[in-house]
Length: 216
Image (cartoon, rainbow, N blue to C red; front, side, top):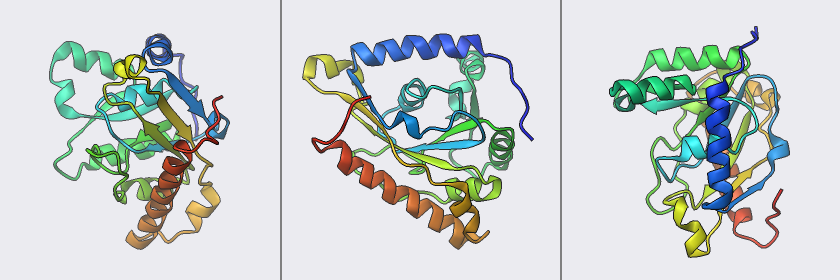
C-alpha cells in the first residue's frame, strides 16, 4: 500500500542547487528522462564511479529518491543528521545487513523510488563490473520495475568545464515488473534479473559513446 508523504523541502532545495552545479561546472547532458515513472515503487540502478554519484544521480531524476549510504557517514552528528534529512539511510558494507533489506522492501512497497549501485563498489577504470544479486532480489520480492542508468564523467566532475568533458546521465528502457515477477523466486532468478540489468547498463555505455546520443 502506498502512503502519502509530505514534501521534503530540504531535499528539493539541495536537488535544485546540485542540478545547477551539474549544468554549469559539470556540463550535464541528460538522455532518456522520459523512461522514469513518476509514481510507484521504483529502483534506479546505475554504474558507480565516484563517491558523489548518489547525489549527482539523485539531482538528475525529477522525483524524490531514497538511497543507501555507508554507515560511517552518519557518525559525525551534523553530517549524519543532514543526509538523513535528504533520504539517506545507513548500510554496513562489510556484512549482510538484514535491516537495510527490510527497510528497502518497505520503501518500495510504499511506492518510493530507491537508488542502487548493483556493482557494490566503485569502478576504478570505468568498466561496468558484474552486479550483486541484491538488486534482483529486491525487485523480485516487491515487483518494483528497474530503470538502468549509465553515468559518465562524474569523478571530479567540477573539472569538466575546464577539461572539455561532459557529465552524461543516460536513462535506459525500464525493466518492467511483469518480466521481473516471471523470474524464479530464488538465487537463480535474482541472478537473471541482475544480469539483464548489467547487460542493459553495458548497452547504455556503448550508446553514450556514440554520436547518436541525444540531449534532452
